[in-house]
Length: 116
Image (cartoon, rainbow, N blue to C red; front, side, top):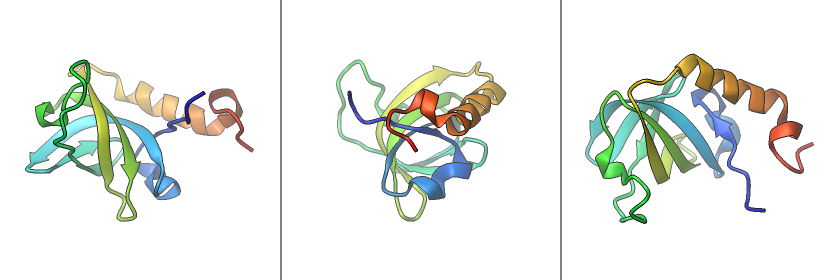
């Protein structure tokens, strides 16, 4: 089995420094090599301009106000280096997303193998 990529939001960034995570939020700002997403709080993401496989969305195609799920690595400054990104459009229930994040942390043993 591949390593788990825990689902987090802005509240959990400091607990996952140096780890690969999944974070889903609304694109609120695009600026050069960085973007800001709202994932129950603002998160700065560092864009990766390397061309991924065609079936993955390149982060250079982030769309303002769309939901985006990012698989990335949390840096020590709590920014997230994008490894891959998937656009979820502009019609997403963010309260449901936050509920899923909270459930995965409350019931780790259900969602992640080998947790204490």
